[in-house]
Length: 531
Image (tube, rainbow, N blue to C red):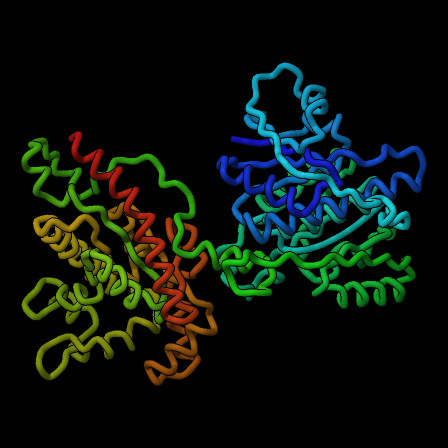
């Protein structure tokens, strides 16, 4: 459901808060705010005053949304109200108006059957326009840059500020490649094309009179180092010094200096750490533990069970058909085992595939014989068991040898995992976790309903493994190079978790994930009951 809010630029902060609270209570997925009550421009000075008044109003709305209603998708129009409704992505279902907007509602929406909510409150009785800046800078060609991952209120505020300073062309440099490497949870950054599309769609929607162009940038200066038509650079407080450096470089190249317009940073909701800036990295961190996207429509019957063609309803109810299986995976030292224990504490049955790997080549098994034949008797301990450390020293040096070991062991582990799932089914478990470092490499993701991935940064992995195993950095890096990357895992993940921070934060991620999982498990059980 979408909503249009008609609000005077004279609205008090209290009225703005009331309006956003009403919109939030209606569970709208998009709130389009149309400001009115500014003077229509008849001169260049009036145009700047209009832009300045909208800027002050827009700042108030986005600031309130950021702090009080961070989940509300707010978009403030920078157009004249008469032109706004044709630009909306959605037909509004609800109209919210201030006390002075009844006539404007009739003018914009005519006789459409819409739900209209009238706010109660007063406009600012002060001399509002006496404080508006007639010196508000307006330029033909404006530029700004950023990552623009998970387009949030801070991005909207920054882009809107740039649009208000622009009369013709806005160039948005979007960081990619080496500029996003090393960022917090970089694996969760949206693809460039998606981010660019989001920026253009937003700009076109809130300010149709300005042409918005996006360009991927792979070094900090981007188009500011070469585009002589640019006149203004919009920066945040934290990047203002970078703007000064841009002008130094442009001066050396004989290019005109850019006017720097500095925009204040938005802060996070009050429920989070005070003073924390609203950023893409903050949003990525907040996404941990949540379902990344709706799970695709599929049969809940796992492949090995489907192959049996079981038709008897009584048999189905006593087999692993009844267990919802989570595949938990992650790189070395990513905290996967600790997270599995947390999931166990929430009632999930855990299948430790590393332990099953031990069992897979116990003496007198087929896999045991094949391992000795393939890698020699040196991998056998004095007690006859396979010496995993000796075996690891061989297989981690050559990918071909590692693949040989996998082809021997993986099928047996999968068979043992199937037995464990069926055991949990007979015990009445609703959820079980296939804890497997090689879940994706082995193709076991086809045996689970969801894939959950644990990640930590590369440098943190190196530190943890060196400390834990007492091996050199070179050895750790060699092991990492033989494994799937975090990015590859995340591409197949339904839920992403991270143990980078304190244990209680990881615990909270798991609690969120397990809580949200209950609805999907209920849907699964409902489907199974109809079999």
